[in-house]
Amino acid sequence: MITVHEYPFKMVEHEFFVLFCQMLNPEFEMISRVTVKNDCMKLHALEKKKLKEVLGGATRVSLTSDLWTSNQTIGYMCLTCHYLDSEWTLQKRILNFCSLPPPHTGLAISDAIFACLLDWGIENKISSITLDNASSNDVAVRNLKKKISIKGRLYFKGKVFHVRCCAHVLNLIVQDGLNEIKK
Image (cartoon, rainbow, N blue to C red; front, side, top):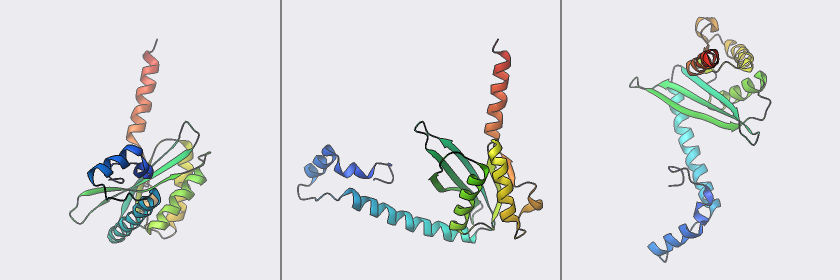
């Protein structure tokens, strides 16, 4: 319930949730938020192990990533992996969602992404990465290409490695067009 509905771990300490559970079964003993957290982390480790096995069998994977800074000035990065399963169905899984302190320099971005690739054991299986048009992403892609191309595993010598996000490009075009007709 906590995982599926993305409830906070402390949900088990909410007064009316505890009361609700006691009304359903007066003998039920509520677990602590620490126990909930530990159970969720065990489940995460189990699912990560399963996905590592799946990705280990994949020939190639593609990545997408995005970064943003919250209104509390906390930087975040999300890295998603896309691959074809054994039935040739496109799958996507979030590999990492982490804090990435500003400034989001190209080196910081590439280091964070490459560390994630190493953790998942897929650093030699990357076909492409889709990022928005931020100049720091150009630097990040150059650094990633250097690290990945050492093994000579990039298609077309890396010429198709960096894919620019179509939605981001389209948004920029629309914004420019709106600025033109604003008057």
